Length: 93
Image (cartoon, rainbow, N blue to C red; front, side, top):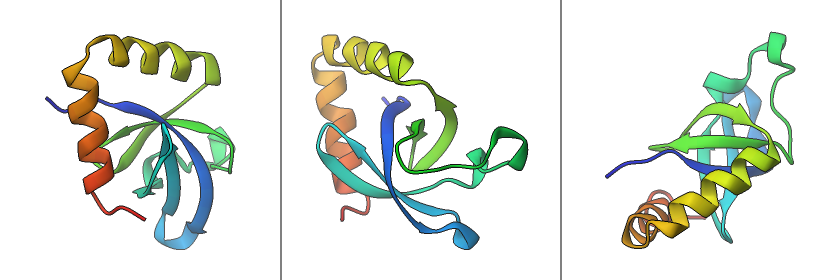
């Protein structure tokens, strides 16, 4: 199952190439932030939370929504384990 998982942007690598680093439960990986960089939304910056799916930040979310979503996914047990394993294996830093 491929879920969107909340992650926090911890580093901007290259905005021209839409590259940043996000962290989910201590696991960091490079993600593409091109879909959440619109100037109308204020761009993207370190500390913001995003919903990540297959290496792409799909939407900005607030910290409360991130915590609630992550808590719910963790309650699913093996689904969370599978998601975090996939996050860890996909272009780890």
